[in-house]
Image (cartoon, rainbow, N blue to C red; front, side):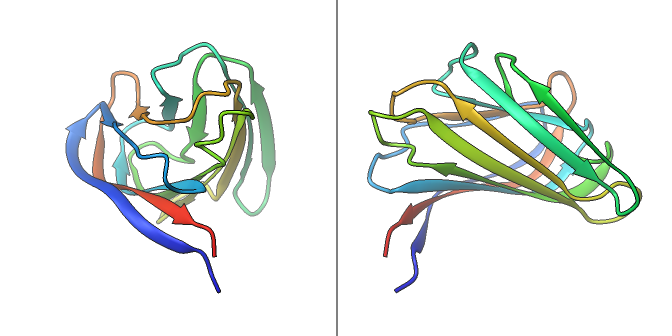
Length: 156
């Protein structure tokens, strides 16, 4: 039997620089954050439980003819969107988010709808054993427009 995806919350936004999903219940095995829309900046930052000091990420970027990678040990978890000013889809899987015995791992993928650039993959770890009950997404001083949905995933 396949896993079940249940929408936890959806937010449609226009011209905002940040959004928050709060009071995420600990009743699922994993979370999936999906965004479909437009971003003025190539970076979207994801932060868990308001913690800005325990993140790290590795990114891989490709456009079909070249590839690059980067590693950040910064306070933010970065998901790279290949082009500024482009429509795209973003999916971030957050594994074992409610387990209070392990650090939390996540994988993100972004696919651009048109123009130059290409798919981007990023993976990171939030170095905390706290259950995730809040997810914040921001783009520094630029804006996002589109729809965010966070899903809870129940094991089969």
